[in-house]
Image (cartoon, rainbow, N blue to C red):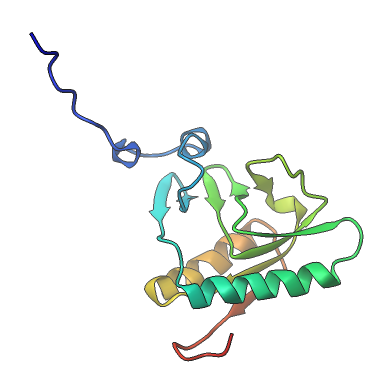
Amino acid sequence: MAAPEQEQVHPYDAPGPWSEEDWLALPESTRVELVDGALVVNSAPRNRHQRLALRIGATLDGAATGGWDVLNDANIRLGPDRAVIPDVVVLREADMDALINDAVDVGLIVEIVSPSNAAYDRILKPRLYAEAGIVRYLRVEHGPGGAI
């Protein structure tokens, strides 16, 4: 007699609200942010967006003085059940083995506006950063034919 088939449950199907602990248990390869207990799922950005983020990160890294690290797509804890993944972040002496970084260690956040979630990038994320005490925020706008 064959064992009954078990229904496979997708990790995002769990009812909310989600805690930071739940969020951190998701696979590392996912691009999911946590905002007030709700998951915000984003697909990987377009190649143009990724290339721009790499170039901005490399430029900032070249200019960073001792004690500062520049990372792309790092998890940033903004508060209880709030964690986001900015395109580029400058952190005070980042722990390279950490899975999440605290807002208090952020020197600069860079967000490149994506056409698919422009309102999120332009309105919600700047507010969340300000509420977390992050005072240096750079928003980059680019058109579909913009230079990289």
